[in-house]
Each structure stands twice: as C-alpha cells, then as structure tokens.
Amino acid sequence: MACGDMWRRPERSRRDRSLMMLSITIALRHWEEFVLHVRAPKNDGPTDEEIGAVSQHAGVYAKVPAAHHAYKVAGPILDELRGAECA
Image 1: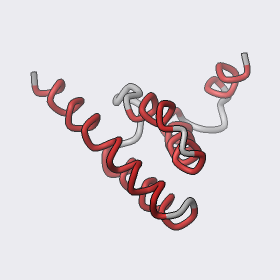
Image 2: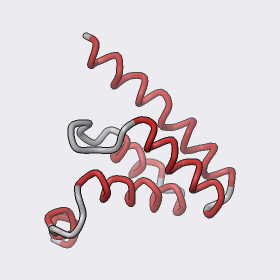
Image 3: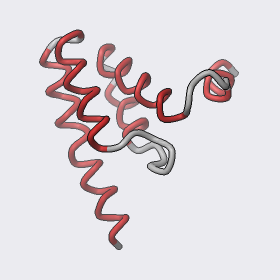
Image 4: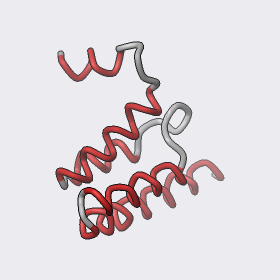
C-alpha cells in the first residue's frame, strides 16, 4: 500500500511526515484527513505549537480561509487531547 510505504521510509521522521500531511490537507481543504493527522499519536507527532505554525504558514500559501479553518478544526481537538493527558 502506498500510504504505508511512505510512512516507513527512513528519510523523514514521523513528526516531519505529520507536518507535511497537515500542510497538504490544509491546502487541499481535506478537513476529515486533517482531523486524523491532528489526532495522530502525540509521542512522535508535532507539538501544538508546530501545528499552529503549519496553519500560519498555510495562510500565506494556501490562503487565509484555509488556515483559519485549520485553527478552528484543530483547536477543539487539541483541547480534548490535552484534557485526556491530564485525566
């Protein structure tokens, strides 16, 4: 499967791949896929700050409406995940 092969390649870390996926899904406005990658395991994924930075960067290149929507979608998920860590 192509997706599995891409995630197993040694050239990039899982964190880097997650950041790439977030930026691609924002640019394409594939919000369901974006949610999946925001929810990705936090132990080897991007930090909340990195997710925010990707959304800001997308605002320049994928236009502000996509970046704004990314913040709107990611915020509640990150809040939920932070709450689960404290429980």
